[in-house]
Image (cartoon, one colour):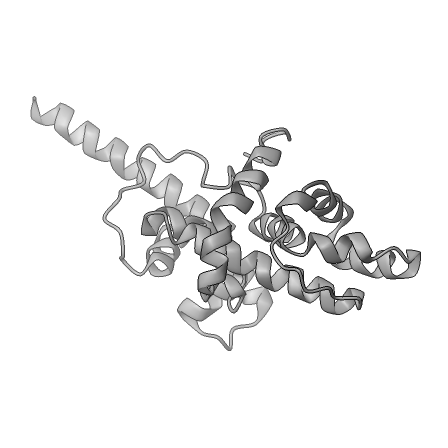
Length: 210
């Protein structure tokens, strides 16, 4: 291959890398950026740094901590097809606790729950009652919402653990630090495949996020 063509290919590859790395940095949760740079940074400063096109490729390298040698070429949508990972977790968590959702019939309690998890997650859980995991019933709507979020994030983390590091991080970096996705239990690993097959099938019926 002539030297000029080799140089052109390298330049094109470098440009693609910059574009994909910029997208990754722009989509990362601000707490991830702050943790990489300085946890004491103000939220406004983090946003300024995160939206700086010149800094985005470097931020992405810091976020990934050099644990991949991929140049980003050929990247398509991430494992969730660009859908919000928190929403995906709430969907999974709602199925996990679907039996409690079914028992929560008070309008006042339903209003509190839906304020926390969303009407679509509530409906998704009820619709997939047959796949519910836990038999423990939670009557308090706020406690139920917290458990749905916790178990849903843990299932997301367990599901992501089955994928290559880069693909896992492309989703995890869009979540704030400290969610249960970072430390799933074995029970979440056992259920994650089935629950996320349901979640992904539902997402395919929606307008793609990307």
